[in-house]
Amino acid sequence: MVAPASHVLSADPLALAFDAFQPATVSDAMFSLGLKDSALDPTVRLVSGRRILGRARTVGRTPITANAGQAELAKDYAFAIQQVIDGCKPGTVMVIATQGIASHANWGGNMAHRASHLGAVGLVTDGALRDVEEMEGYGLTVFAQGTSVRAGQHRFATTVANGPVICGGVYVRPDDIILGDRDGVLVIPPEHAGDIARKSAELLGIEKEMQAFMDSGASLYDAVQKYKVR
Image (cartoon, rainbow, N blue to C red; front, top):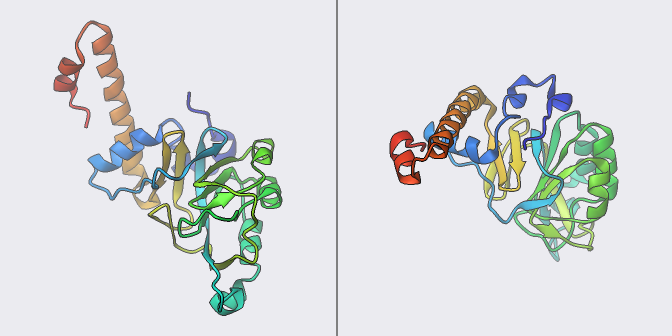
């Protein structure tokens, strides 16, 4: 059952158009339209919550080295992650890209506390988080590669503050539409959102007809031959 997001995204009809669809259906729609694959790597999995839909707000993090820390990598970004979180609003999905490194947590309870207070709906990261038990209490849905008790502070530097990042092998921009459930996470380009939503509705309608056809006694083979969903 798809959980409605209308209470959060009422002022964002472009994103809200995807409230009725599963990411798998939307992925099929994008494929049908000849758009580029934007599904995050399957290593980014659901950790807390059930479903996410909102607009991306992004942070890029990179591990520090023996001879280069925050000052050398991006000296003006020492508190950038806090500033990006402070800019959250209703419907925000925080996206934290860590180059797929999940050895240390780059999200935790204090960040979740602030983000949820501002209306953020969740987090997507190709790294790790901690304080998982707190996330559902804040009403946040979280997708991550894993968890770690070890803090990322002093081990990662922020190098991107609400700019384009690569997360889970996918290019993500601020304000891209993020849709995710237990199947995975999809990035929807807003400039194609209208076409994608219409195609998703079309595919969903075809699938319902196909299932009704099988319920009437038709075989799966006959249903596929008749409807050729993909």
